[in-house]
Image (cartoon, rainbow, N blue to C red; front, side):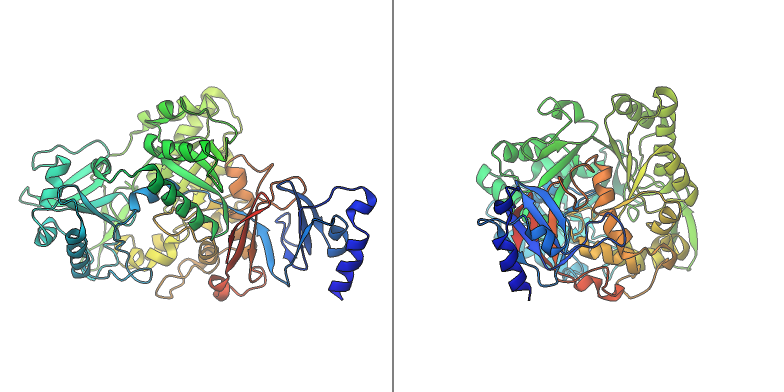
Length: 558
């Protein structure tokens, strides 16, 4: 019946009536435009990279011509292309040809001995024995020993080849003795601002670097030629595309990262849009290369990145009342030993950019950093007046209900790393911050109750940019061990999808061209094998991305 309808409508096509002719039409599917919870269509037409029409099969097929490509969806689901609300796409360049030390289920490194064995093999295979060896992705919270490897343990691998291994969240690393020496770190080296060089109780180096101290590693990482970098960034974009992402983000963008991305853009090699938020200390020099504003060949400087704190498990997030579980099964108040920006300095940064109408995003894991950012924005509004600033606070693990109320009042958008519940919920619950605070990690339910628009993100490459998994984690609130943590913060599947489409486009000031499937917007879409709105929450993770379309062109096909 459908084929007869198709033939009939093609006979009476757009060309017969002098209408615009679609380049491609998708029909006979579940087209979810994200313009309302009850909205669903059957078909969508594409012309010159834009949405030409959305509707039922018959009406959309009126736009078909002789050259129109017609795709039968056979009941598959079409959503707007996912908009990445926070990640670091360029960091993949530093991860070329290195071991990944991920724990289960994404890897196999669950004991320190497994890390040491792999590093021994990796160092043996390196031709250059003088440069810094490097690996990434171990997680001390998931290791059997429940701690970081030590300098002494790394020295058993090699005392002659320098190497460091970086923790999965990127703000902690451990080096062997030779590695520390290569970095210029010695027993008497002072801790940098916002960083820590750890010593044991005897004053000896443990090998652990935290916060800004980790930055000493980056100048020693390999610098690759243009061909290798092109290949790496192409692979990074494909990693996003196969997860349905059509707009990615480079947060904490430094000068080298921006140069890499701009080189790709100048040669029209970007297949997806990339929004860059340079670090505040390099914002001025980066914006000499490209001004904030519209994207140029899919590269856009969208705003500036500030850092209010570090990661929760490192003790670098300076919460108001961080809790650590000790051997006697007690939770005690603990204050971080790593410095962050004080309120006065943070205020100065916020005022500088707010007064110029430059969007601010700020790393805010714990409630102290959230409060600092809220206070700074409130002060800037008092001084310069309220404008459509859309400041976004990133991660938002330890945010309080009262802080979310203030954020709504001030026009601040929270972006939650909801996958924390799945990947680290068990450890946070049992060892790091306790049951109550873990259950209120990523408090989507509170934001939803307040009708405060929010987004969701993966923080890739900390975690894979798997948006389907992110949606599922926001809906079921399940940990890896199958524990439901904070069921009152579970949200509907529609709300979760809204956070990675509609709201994510709003967060980056792109709602006029992205985030929904509507006439005139970019034809950025993702085709799924199942309809997430009718899939049970315990089956959401099984949904597969079949095709990703960027401005009408297929950039990924399973």
